[in-house]
Image (cartoon, rainbow, N blue to C red; front, side, top):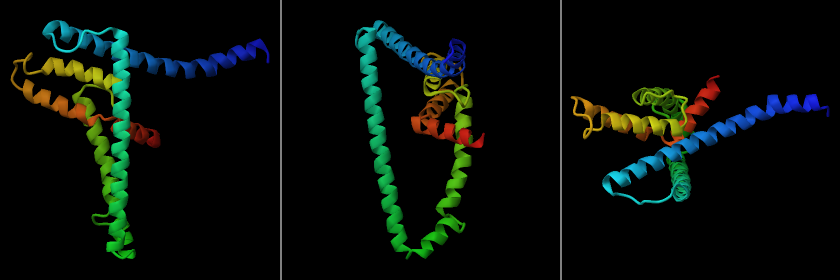
Length: 194
């Protein structure tokens, strides 16, 4: 392979791929560093928490993230098994053919309700993104940082303006909506609609 072709290949293919990985890594590092500094400030301000080094905090953070991921996967698996079990029971309760008509023939069947749910989900996702003042395409680290900023701005202990408590509750509710599953589901919806 000629050096010029090799260099151009690396430049046009290698760098964009590595760039995406690097950007994701840097966002993660920014988030962990921000969380560490918040925890350190809380420790010095109130004495709550532990006074640990950054590397120790990062290790504990990774362990918690991994544990949360395993727990989430376990809950998803259980929910899916429960849904299959209910569908199986419903199928036999309605003697086969009736189940098919109910699910796909209109009314309150699963097909129609899931179709509405997709539309409602997208609207709800974008509404919550507006509440947190983030782009709906933001990743989970950007959402968490925006939440921290908004929560600090409208926290009732820090903000005595009228309506601050209500806004704080909206912000918390919006942040709770942004689970990893919901973020991934929205991204898949956007990719499909392109």
